Length: 497
Image (cartoon, rainbow, N blue to C red; front, top):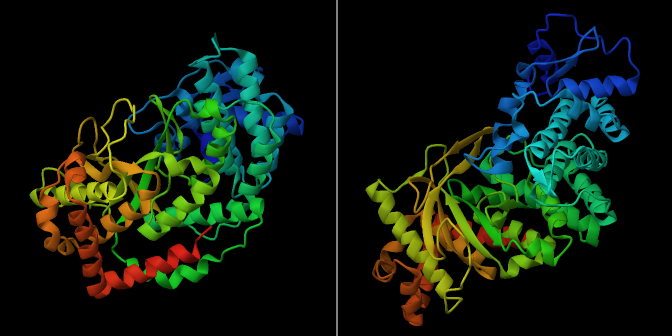
């Protein structure tokens, strides 16, 4: 249950009609009851006189619950009608889309398990209606058949799940349709959803810290691959003792950029991203889901300490082999809810410049040129920025940071200097340097020469090799860092897909 009172109970309480509401438990068939339940969760109540009444306050309990999910769907500061339950867009639209067996079946299934979970699913289905009527779909505005088919598609997919996975399926399928996936039957998608649903059910991690977000995704992806490819199942308990070595270590995430043409080149592209979103989804999380955004397809991962992030990346590559030849931004966060970077902080600025130089040198050590990315807006390849970030502490999500253009102002550090297989190197070196910035003192001379990717490429190969070797020597000479280094190697090996 979301609250002590219960989500659905709040919805009913928040509606204050002037005339009595129809008693849905006493006069209707079971399918009619489930239909009215779904309508109520989107603000529509049938009155005793058979007229429908709308009250935006009825669905306000969802506002707080889906504050994070709204960001994960559409990004910070973006607007869409999906989560906007304040507008009365006509009960006819909802009644038409909800009055079909797939909807009443999925509502009934989850009402028997948890009424609040069923209310959440009903709200997701209503979100698709709100979204679709505000957009031009296939050249037709407000096409009733398109909306009905979309709602049927999501409800049928959600029926494949169970208590722990239903919300993740509904969310992932919604993003799938919003991004450009087709609402059509597909055995591959059905089988994938079924196996990922099982993987979510078996996920042993209950996230209470940012580190756990990435660990949970690794657990789900590993279980999914085990079910679909016959891999040996991994017990995450084997890494528990190794995690203690990373107390206070930064968390690392990544944002991969695919061309908008990628979905056209592979009909299963959106399908695979939908499964990836299921593995990533956590209620209330602000971490963005993979989606089509402003001319580029963004693929995200849940953050964690660097060895788990590397393991996560290795698992994601099994589902998305294209990651081996994909541009990405690596993001890095200091631990703690008040640990944002600030360009205006003189100490932070020095450290950020050193980390940027280290990241660029790491790239230059693998590649010998600057690729032409054709990426619109935002920042150019080889640049660094500060931007929005999310942290999880004691099961509470915190969203902070500010990025509007250029380098941003505060938040997590992002370096857009990633390509293909250099993610493990970027994650490792940046994490070690941020855990103990003092290890950078001996390579200050080399780092000071690098402010752009061109600088890193012009740096002599011997100097780049010196930087990596010297940092590794410092790591092995420091008890805490060396312990983390050895534990990290063990984690990556144990979690190898």
